[in-house]
Amino acid sequence: MSRSAGIDIGSRTIKLIVIDNGEVVVRKKRPSTYNPMGLCDYLLEGVSYDTIVATGYGRHLFKNYRKGEVITELKAFAVGAAHIAPSCGTVLDIGGQDTKAITIDPKGGVERFEMNDKCAAGTGRFLEIMAAALGFRYEEFAQEARLASRAEPINNMCTVFAESEVISLVTQGVPRSEIALGIHKSIVSRAINILKRVSTGRTLMFAGGVALNSCVAGLLREELGVEVIIPDDPQLVGALGCALHGQRS
Image 1 (cartoon, rainbow, N blue to C red):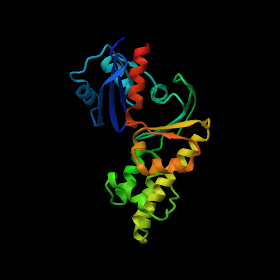
Image 2: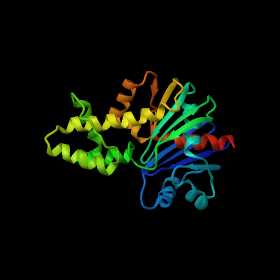
Image 3: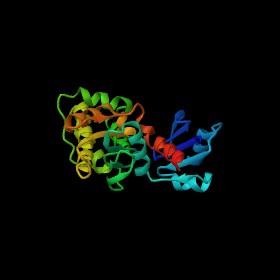
Image 4: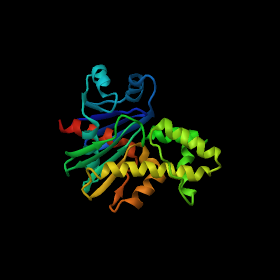
């Protein structure tokens, strides 16, 4: 069995997985920079592999740079999710710049999918900007939201208008934790609207960087009437799917 590498070159983070004899032997990730191929070189330094498959925003650039195979993020996340949890029928991936909902079969095939538009609303970048507007470090943003006894509704999902709305609410004296909870609820509402167009009602896997946000994860579990699985490292699902695809090719 070949030693297969998978690399997910996302808008906010680059992730690497290497599989050897069916076992994951390398796991790496770093925040994206202005030089994604240089960061790929850094992650791959000293790493041996027979095949490499790339996905994510930078996959086509990587293909020309490293001559590896590329697959779509939809395929990568479907294959990775099916391997981690064969029972899951739907994958929700909320990443740095987009949201994807994918219905999959037990072998990791894509049956249906929906994505948000090219706007960053409802994504990791949106959360980062809202946290900054409220004066929170990103790491404490979800914790503060979970402390709120009520949520202040956020009417705008456009990142620019939402930021202005948040600043206005702060100047009106609305508690920051209540605004934070309202922001998280708006993210979850948007994700559920996308899920409704593809969901089978079977187990859901929540993947991508926003799955690390405990408030979003908790609200999803409250709102959905299905089991929600969050992998140990939800950011690595796409890279894992790439590595698995490389072994099958």
